[in-house]
Image (tube, rainbow over all chains, first blue to last red; front, side):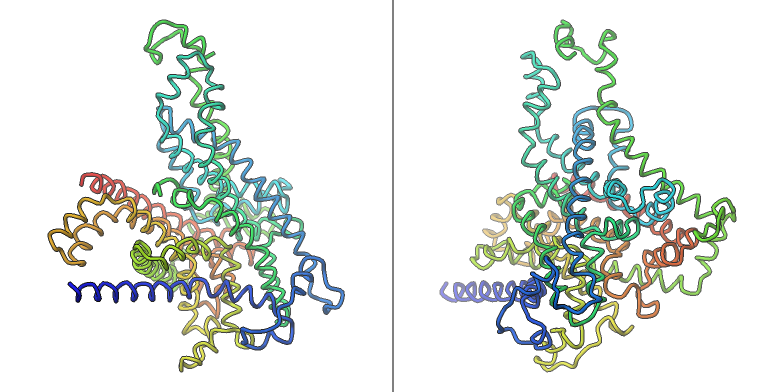
Length: 287
Length: 312
């Protein structure tokens, strides 16, 4: 008995050690990114972990830096890129909400011909290689004048945000018993009333989480704004590539920009942690 | 109008011919906006398939009407780099999905214990996969960089020689798959963890009382019950790594040379960078067909596995 207990202790400690090793691997790059963003120019080329932190990189990224060498365009652009990401991603999520919430409801509640095919077509956007759509779109957008416009980017972001919203929300609607609706209808409430006053409050937490996750995916997207956007709508993801190819001495600036560009997702993701599993698996896994 | 429906005395709503057409058409009306949006996305897809049968070059006016049949496809299949491109696309997807699944399984099982360390660490699991793939990759690129980077000093510290990472063909695939594994192992771990936590206690308790070994329980209980979750991970990770663009592009743009030129990178370089629209499209369309077939098969397998798991 005594022997078994010590054996269990050893297994437990060993498991914790392996876990800590994995998380060292998982978190080190992010910690390093934050450290580098706090380093001043001369300290950048040392591998020291103890140094005097400075916020000059953040100041330079956000407000421009008169003393910095000319030719590094990226830093003054950051606030604009950030705004572009914000506008394009929120716009895309709004469009998806307006279109996707009713669609998710219909796919969850009604029986109609071609329902499953339709649902899978929406899902297939998520898995199809984007270039099949983007290469022709790069031509069509130029003809329609949508190239390098916010609306153009929001439109193509639907490939990312709409399948997610429809599939996650559908699973939430399916969780609500149709009896609730029927009961309210029998009590004389109109369909609109039932939908907005009874169903929506029930799915609201899931809806908010799905919308925020869709926002994160839109924000993180790289290929769409790379191909279909120019300097007007350049997002942080596309711009970040420019930071690293500019002078090497500005790696600390690049790190500061990365930290700022990653903060929204980390804060949002932590706030919807309870709903993340279902969102990330498109409703397949109900975590 | 629903009040109207409710006032009709017959309970069989669906067959009532006096039911206003607006109510009967409701599912279609509700889904109409999404359908319109769908058409807006399917239209370019159809145009893309059409372009792949033409000699469309963005720099040559009216070349989109120059129909050439299967020439672009023949050129793709006979290209001397086609086989290599196929190999690198599949190698990337198989390596990343395999390692992520294996590592994710271990991490999830270690997290699913009554341990303070596990409780503290679990919320941090999401960080690598929630930041933009491009930015995550650029951080790794900085870490691999010879003058500022930290990875070589770490290797030297533990007595290993420095590496040139993605700068040389020998370690380029290793470098990008490492970033992918770093980024998406948490996804696999989270799915498995959700699976483990959803299991009923009874069969595991029974196994424990019967004195079953860890391996016996794992092979005969845990793994079969995890199958639907494992398939979901494969669906997402295998499909996504077949078409991975962000990590490879941010790291080397497909280089050095053609070392990392997957289908997706080849299509991008040919169609967008060289503006030979129709020459790159067959790669994207071939990838689409592969993904379509594999995902159909996987989704069917998922349905089967779920039914089987529910039958326990």
